[in-house]
Image 1: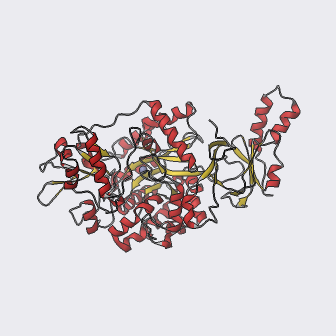
Image 2 (image 1 turned 30 degrees about the horizontal axis):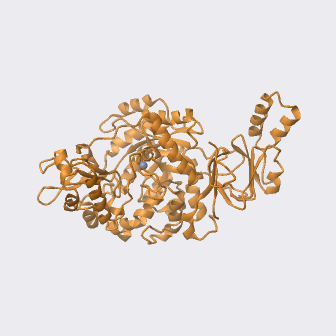
Image 3 (image 1 turned 180 degrees about the horizontal axis):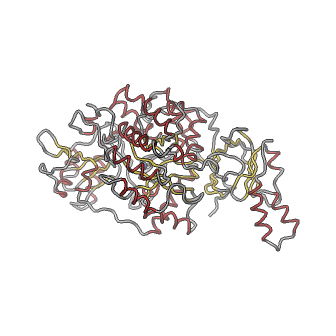
Length: 590
Ligand SMILES: [Zn+2]
């Protein structure tokens, strides 16, 4: 039989109906037997064992109560059942973004759109325009600018920036590194005498404008003040509506400080939350130089651990950050970054491998303190050496506290060599990957690290072949638009890149690492649900699971590969509620 009733869901509905004593008995019984919604005449990809594709689902009490053929499911419909003809459209389990920062991105364009800049002339033109519109001395800041994403694949030079903005301090922030001009140095008191490893200098010992994140605190610009709480919540709700429009029903928020959990709780209480959230908690205490006892005491003081919460807001992993980023040459690599990176990022030391913030001993103490309290442990690790460091810490702790049940992860990782993949498999560590980075940056990485080292870059097929669970996300940080945001959070762009290994610049890089369409879809659904310990309630379409689904505008499994990135959601449903609709006859709920 292709479908079966979910008894507990039916019982809950029965209890509700029985409570409405005013209804005649026969009517109440009819309501119990009929689902809230029946979606039929579709092509429903369940991602469940069998059958893999059906035509109809029934939803009651926010869960799937039947999954099967039109005949089987339509037979359950009663007079009050809402019937939705899918007109042969494809239905997938609701997509889950495995790593994004929509909370930060939501407020990033409140004061104006952040320009999407693709070349040095466009960048200089933007700086010049800003300089003309701002009083002398006012800072010009771009919050996310990466040299690898400019056509020329280089940073603007100090003289280029000084020419267009002689009297305005300029700061092009690349998260882990950036560029400043002479006016910014003057305003911040940075000179040849400034002794900070984050200030890069030329052969004459003069600052050349390139800085790494350790020098960011030296910059004397005004820090943006936090918005009033309700404004933050409204901005985030609006961005999460955009997430719904591309098919997301759940998001892992990449970094949440403990004091910010209340933002999500506020959204829940005020009816603004229609997205299921898994909140990675970023440690807000220092690990450096701390003893295990001290770190353990601070972890215990948090008062909760992974899994606390419910199907809407759940506490995620305990996270720290290990290194910088691949787009600014600050990722901690296994080998020196190399000569091309020296040109692009302005690195002057040929043996430079990037930056690591913690020693392996410190990291081990952090992992141990969290693991012994039941936390899923994770870290931002973008370079291969940072990933190896994290795996080393995991292996040490695993001797005393088995880590596989905690489903620990490597966030980003990027460079997955056979050795590293084998270690991840042994530890049950999940790869939390960002395929849009591959799409945007694989060409630059190939130019920088060469054809041999690129083989491990986002090696999806090797990971999956070895049995490592791969969950996929965007690392969306700023801007609102799904395609021009940094980073683009449109899952269809990411899935296109996973399936084709094609890049924005039109290359195909390491096609042997491509995934099948079903595997790529799993990275955005059931694998992300597994990563948050929710594979029994989310990530596939199955009787008893939460009724989270997306209806798309073309056949994902059969359409030409080039069309995958053009896929759009026409209907997104979370817990049986329509949260996004492009169908005129199916309004989204308010
Ligand atoms: Zn992130």
